[in-house]
Amino acid sequence: MGTSTIHKPTFLILQMFISPLLILCDDTTLAKSLGQSSFPSNFLFGTASSAYQFEGAYLSDGKGLNNWDVFSHKPGNIIDGSNGDLAVDHYYRYMEDIELMGSLGVNSYRFSISWARILPAGRFGEVNLAGIDHYNKLIDVLLLKGIQPFVTLNHFDIPQELEDRFGGWLSPESQEEFLHFADICFKSFGDRVKYWATFNEPNLQVTSGYRSAAVDIFRSKYQKKQGGMIGIVLYAAWFEPISNSTADKSAAERAQSFLTNWILDPIILGRYPSEMNDILGSNLPEFSNKDKDKLKSGLDFIGINHYTSYYVQDCISSKCEPGPGISKTEGFYLQSSQRNGVPIGEYTDLDWLNVYPQGLEKTITYIKERYNNTPMFITENGYGEVYNPNSTIKDFLHDVRRVNYIAGYLNALSVAIRKGADVRGYFAWSLLDNFEWIFGYTVRFGLHHVDHATLKRTPKLSASWYKQFITKHKVVTLMPGPNQQKFQY
Ligand code: BGC
Image (cartoon, rainbow, N blue to C red; front, side, top):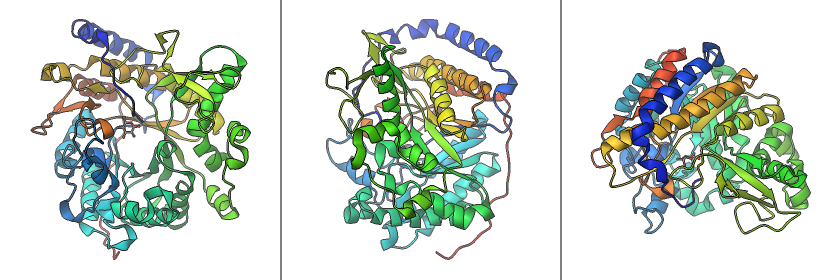
């Protein structure tokens, strides 16, 4: 996500004056509105990250190059000419970062495993034991601190060797490669990792073939012995019909289907969404019997990355301006953040991100109803700010708008839970400012500020706020022992 241009909102300066009041208001309102009962006692409160955006150490300890190492090194691909070679040096600073998590009081940490660190050349090379060792240490230290690892197998990075040989995800060979990688991860870490997500946002990233296979192998080889849950993480926005017309309401439904349901329906309901069939018909791939069998393994949970909402206008019954959503393969709708010039929610620095907390409640309720209340985790939710070289460190740390965003979305989440949604965790994106893909270091999502020259981490106001919030909603910590196993690979 996030491949759009960036605006600067005009109310930036005002925030300094009104912020203490806002904090007070929000906190008090939340304290009143969120009884202890809103979040189950075993609810996971965490922060999220991904390997390429955090780790750095891009050539350390036998890691192979991946697609992002290569892409980011090509001039012009990253807005500020940067790359993730160092990122926020989490590979070497994970102990310090776990301390930060400890002081936030979170009981879970969502991170991804760098495939090229485990298998530098996919199946065309050996397992990199130093990579295994790194994640073993990370997992063990987390568990000793009472922090549950919530592991994503693939968050956009794949070994460059596979990209070169197979064109990345375009070839079915990649599916075999991914299975091999997943198998090694389950085998190596599955005694301690109880939450696995196969892919991050395949709806924005890859085609359908890969999503169920790793689930199948986990179910048949590991789950009985190791326990744990396996799911997938999807990008899910909320779509409000721009008017009450039936056509716009159907367009909003189509938008959900073309963004999110096309991944979940086959896995959970065994078929493509009818809105998609209507438009794409025979262009949709057929499931083979083998596929159908694998799809039956389903999911233990749905991971939801939710940041924002949009208005949607129908483009079948009337002609639309050019814009996102209008093509046939997108579903013939026009997506917009505004209606008659009025934004759906408060503007932010990022033009794809408007603040509309009720969109989270609606998204959860929609997914709950469509998929029979399958357990859900909010695997990402967060607020990005554009780096402004004229700002002082004090400005960065005083991130009132992020506090208000997270407070609002947590409130919406608690409403959905009170109404019966089986949501089991919430992960703020992100623990630290980090490498924001094509935006490099120009966009900051962290609860902690990172000085990219010194890599010093400093808690922002949002970190203190989240800590207080978690304390109020006391979470349970579990402490299984560290890894004792040794494997031959
Ligand atoms: C992605 C993250 C990204 C975040 C903010 C999410 O959709 O999973 O990797 O940093 O959005 O753009």
